[in-house]
Amino acid sequence: MSENINTEKKQFELTGKFSGFLSLEGYELKYLQLNSTEGEYVIKIPKELRLPLYKTLRPGDLITCQGESKHNQLNGQSKWKAYSIDKITEKNHKQSPKIVICQGSACLKRGSQRLSEVLQAQLEQENLDQQVEITTTGCLKNCKQGVNLIVMPEKAKYCQVQTQQLATIISRLTVANVTK
Image 1: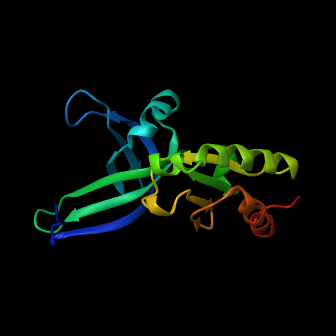
Image 2: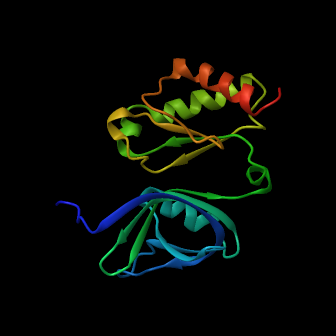
Image 3: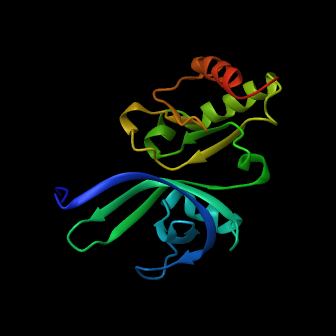
């Protein structure tokens, strides 16, 4: 199916208060409502994030959503689809370092779960596990180059990450953000 030439795609990052889950296409709660300073948004939640979010998000929680928006220039409507949804806690609200690891099916097949475990162990070994948060996300849309991860707050993207590269990523992280 070809993309409509009247549709504009953009990456987004929105921060605001979570209002609740919505069901727009039947019985499944596939969407969340976010109120930010820019307005009110209805954002589609990736399948792999739905259950964890249902268990942890409460109305009024401060969250950050990253994803892709599609704006139809003919009818003026926009659709928002998240690939990452994070609850903002006191720890990450201060822009502490965070490593977001893709858990999409292609990255899982390439070992993202094992990579996450090794990364956690290396952070503990370096005494950084209390300063650097590891989170997982749905597909980062770069499947052929998985395992993919993003280091926040710089938004540095790494593709085809192997466990032997983690020491280099951690050392760059410590130089930029963390004091041992």
